[in-house]
Figure (cartoon, rainbow, N blue to C red):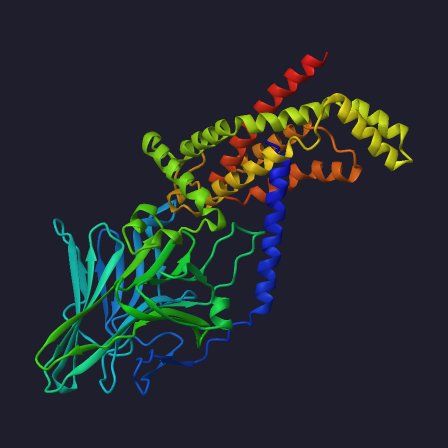
Length: 537
């Protein structure tokens, strides 16, 4: 495969995407500065005539904290509203060289603000929402050895002998947390209740592709009708979401991780997403059908929060469509099978670096006939270079005659100058899809390969792989027919240097893939070129 053209194509695509991101940021008004005090509005019930509000500060008001420790989580729940205010992932270190420091997914302190809230609503009833204080039994919970579940209850008692127990249920080796509202009506009249759940996230600037790999931080929803949709912060600012849905889920995404509220598949809800004061954004849902609680009766309202890594197998076991949060873009139909194959290879070799190498070799083997056709065309073009130079010298002042003579030469030598283009076009989607597989897969995060490469998701600390890739591009140019245009020659000569610098900041797993791909292409191209040139003598 013509790696120069492929890399040039990718570079052009990245430039276009960078320009698009820059344009989007210019169109989006800057987030308002966080005020000293803001108003946090509780979602209105579908039938409510008034909406309860509560005053909050830029740093949310807090009461007692409940610390919860499981095999996968370190969590903190605030008794004010029963919010999930802090969540660290114990099996995912923040940095590869700090294995005992867990990655913090959610927090309500510092520059990052990211929490999960839920509550109840009802006409004429002051149900507990995310601004209501709860009573707690104790401040520390830990999943005991030999136990698979851990329940954390919070209790609210209201007027009219109403009682609500909000219970978080954590499970062993699970990033899904059940949130249950046990509602007891001890009064003399029937009451109704609605449930809502939302995620709040501070404003995040889109990353620059000149400094890092592309990644998305923002909202997403899944509905049975429109399937998976991203709802970026810019989208929320331009047009807040308000959509009736049955089932589905709402989520906040970031590179490698996702948090999602997943209502029951049969529940009728309204999905919403909107900006809030203090440069924060909310995405959530509220039920649209009231649950009736007769006097002396008790009902349960349930929802589930997934908060953890975008591991494909775990997501498949959650709500429908959750696996789509591992976003391969338009090439998902190609990327998904590639990831399955990569994962299958990993089960045999036990190392993601070697799995990447083997997968690249298998793809190269599958496309060998197409690559061979492309390289044969280039080899014939390379063989014709001396004759082409003679024609250029002869018709240097007459471009029309030069074109006619060139076409006649192609016809005489039975060469199709476009013979290498179709094989390249066919292969490009596959290689771009593999690029996104390696970029999006959390399995690559902090995965060691060998020697100095101890994190395939981080840049090569000694830049060995980027230099090897640049050198392989240079060798590829030497094997390819030279451009006739001096300007094109200068551009192509600069490409190895440009891409060496560019890929120096890319994850080592991606660069490893390109190095292996280039080396295999060089070997194939050299073999075919030598054979054709030897046969022409």
